[in-house]
Length: 327
Image (cartoon, rainbow, N blue to C red; front, side, top):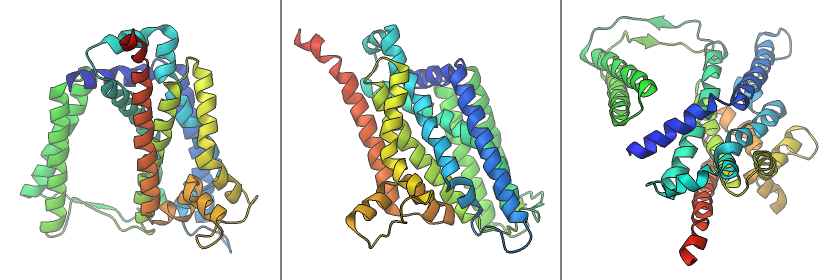
């Protein structure tokens, strides 16, 4: 556990030493800011215009997926390709860690930075959900105190992790998170009103929940594919280009449909259309996730490809040991 956490911290902090990470962060937030502006214009426009699903305009369009298409390859291209080109991969392979630990550590570090990209977009939610009737209350109940204590322990654990990532920080984060969840559940289920935080939303919040769930699952899938490609080549640019080409399998069909170049696939249509609808991640968001729907077929696809990508990455690293074993 300690070695895995050390590797995660090493890979995560390495992003902040690379200018590529800041470029990715800037481009992503700039693009999301523009899409948010256009969505707000539709929400506030007068006359026979508007939008039924704001998250669809934010995440289920061609512009978002053109930006998203380049993000995972840029985040994963250096993870193994740089190690191979600089010769540090051989040193890492001789360290007392398993190949699976190395792959999992790099994947989790990359996913954490990916989550960091999405974090600022949470600032858009109060306006999109019309949280103008939010009310705050000070409620002194046992469950309320449990919730507050859990948040305090969680904050201490996160600060500890920044200073020194180790088992203590991990325990504090997990324990604080579980305590906060238990306190929140008990407070909102068993305690009578008023609650700590009450919201009257003008728009159904479920599309927000399902949209971010879809972003987490789809992001994990594309990051796992990029990680596998990075383990196969030495050059970071080649790793990024190959990953971009591989991602087109899951993006291009949806871009063509959303752009109006091909008809909308039908689940009851010909096999080609059904296959296109199954593989096209942009269509999953346009038709399901951004409308508050979770199709288990999409979840199975994302999880399966993620596990396959991680498995292939581990096998790719193990193949580097075979010549030594044969010799």
